[in-house]
Length: 165
Image (tube, rainbow, N blue to C red; front, side, top):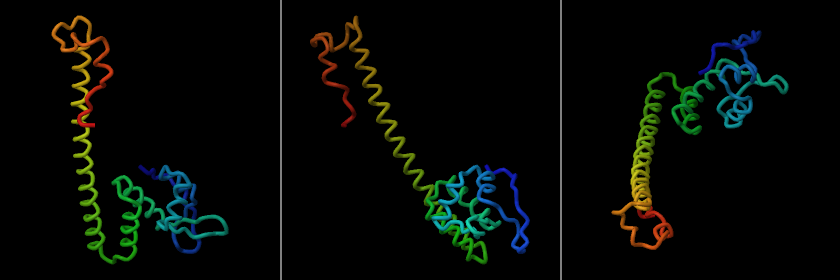
């Protein structure tokens, strides 16, 4: 979470507080390289003073929104759509509607991933149970195991059944 600590320089141009790339990197616990990457992607557009990047409140808010979108698992392209909408929307209705659509899509993708993960975990559980059962059958002194009549080590060559794999 970003800290409220920032070293805003006074701006004599009347545009408000300005920040260096280091200021924003420190505030949002980012690397300067990450901020430059966002600039390369067109997500933030600092002013320049020679080679120095000068960030204003607009870029600071955009970085905050980028990080919020990333926490939600949105792709940078989706974040860009929201940021662009933020720039042109005079009312919040279009912005909120778009955000709700992105959230619904993200929720659907996460639920599908959860179902996929649950299916894989169930398969792993079954394979694990089968392997443990087979190890128990192979234990010395196991009188009721079916492997007693098989030659020593015969069950090991075959390998565990991997659930159709």
